[in-house]
Each structure stands twice: as C-alpha cells, then as structure tokens.
Length: 211
Image 1 (spheres, helix red, strand yellow):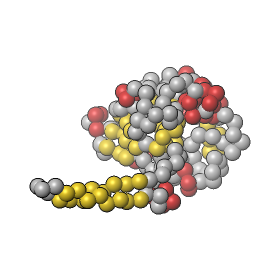
Image 2: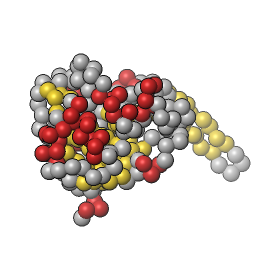
Image 3: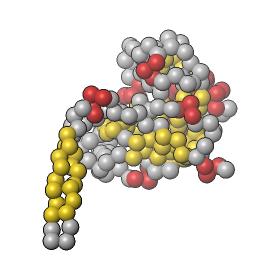
Image 4: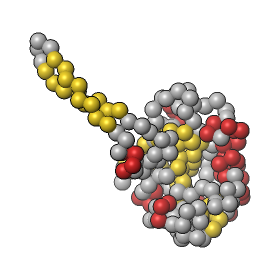
C-alpha cells in the first residue's frame, strides 16, 4: 500500500476564510504574478494534534515550535483494528490487547475502532475509551496516539489522563481502515508556530518499509 494519507480536509467554512492576493512582480528581465494567501485558521480545523499543554493543568512546556521533529517523523506505530458500531459504548484495555494480540511496544499507536466508518458517521462520542483502555496504553509507554474515538458524552477526562502521561493525540483522522499492516511508520506534520499546543496537521502512515 505504501503511503496512506490519514488527514481530514478543512471544512468548506474554513476554506471560505482563505483570501487570495495577486502580487505583480516586475523587473527589466521578467514579469510574473505571485499568488499570496491570507487566511484564518482554527486550531481544530481538519485533522489536528493536541500536545499535553492543550489542557492548562497538564502543560509540560511543549509547543509547536519546540517539540523535537523526530518525535513525529517516521515513528514506529502499532495498529489496532476494531469494528465498533455507533452507540456501542466503551472500549476497554482488555479489548485493545486482545485485538492486537498482546502489548504494544512502539512509541506510537493507531486505533481504528470504527472499522470503515468515519467519526462523523456515528452518534457523537457514542464509542469511547474507558479508563482501563487508557491505563493499558499508558502502560505500553506510547507517546503519540492517533484514534477515531476518544472521549464519551459524559466527559470523563480521557484527554486529561492521556496528557498527564505525556501522550500527544491526533484527532479527526480519516481513512484509518485503509491501514492494513500491524505496524507502520507514522508521520505527523505541522508548522512551527510559537505558543500553539493544538495545531492542524497532516497525518501520514507508511507501511512500505515492511515489504
């Protein structure tokens, strides 16, 4: 399969905030027009990464401009697949371990809990991680999580627990069901904008290294 783009596109509303300026450039040797864009971006447009500082109480000082690039580039990533339906409730640590066939031993983890469904195709937050799932992931030592589920409608503190453990999360990924390998190399790309702890990102899985 090779490169698999797991990124959610910006909404039409976000794309509507992009304004184009045409800048004429002239000299004695040449003439052309530069296309310059002004835009407004919300930190939750498209797919986005949350660093632990996205919650004030778990802020560890990491920002988009100071986190090491190697923490997000071609990171070995285990893949867990489930086939949960809308409204099917909590995912446990035991369920994750059984689906994977043991403990995860990579720095990153990708959880495709919804099969071929995308997050917007189920009742919002009707499938979620319970605390045993979080404890299991933390015990595996992961530092980066990409998943199509997270919190419940009750807001039980899923992100709070993950961030306290120093785990960054990627929200609103797409096409997770296209990832077929048990382990891939994961890359999460985002601009080095100072102060930001939540940033729109590009998410890429690569399973070609296994071939």
